[in-house]
Amino acid sequence: MSKNIQIKLLTKDGVLPKKQHALDIGYDIYSSENVDLLPKKVTLVSTSIAIALPSGVGGFVLPRSGLATKHQITLINSPGLIDPGYTGELLIPLINHSDEKYAIAKHDRVAQLVLLNVENRDFEIVESLTKSERSSDGFGSTG
Image (cartoon, rainbow, N blue to C red; front, side, top):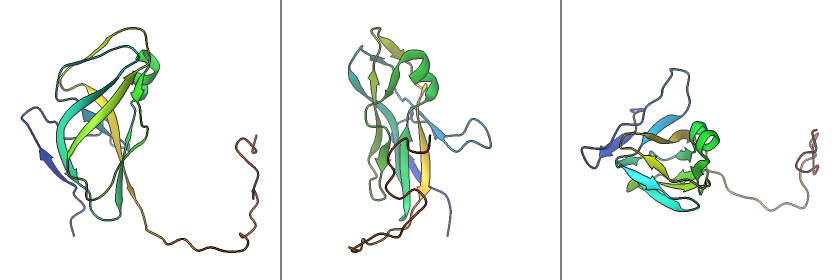
């Protein structure tokens, strides 16, 4: 069985996701259009790619740290989840938190795709849960 992910370039402007460095986990996703991100607004950015994930593989679309820290641009639904079975175009919903318009150029990197192998499980109702070192200590409880 092939470990390759099927991808379709929907237009000549679609770019195959790729890693910048061999040890990277995220694959950069590229804009297929020139688009202005208006201040305080959400804009769907076209990628002109569609993928077919195999059963048991989830695709997580994450923001790029450079866009977020330098320009206050991130994903409105971070992380975005691509389920197996969705084969439509990957659209990237970016929000510009700054007070300035920001121009995205065709083929700019706009997000990252991380693939995660998952094992589907059933839920079982029980009277009590197995004790752990942390148990019910909440967020921030480890210092």
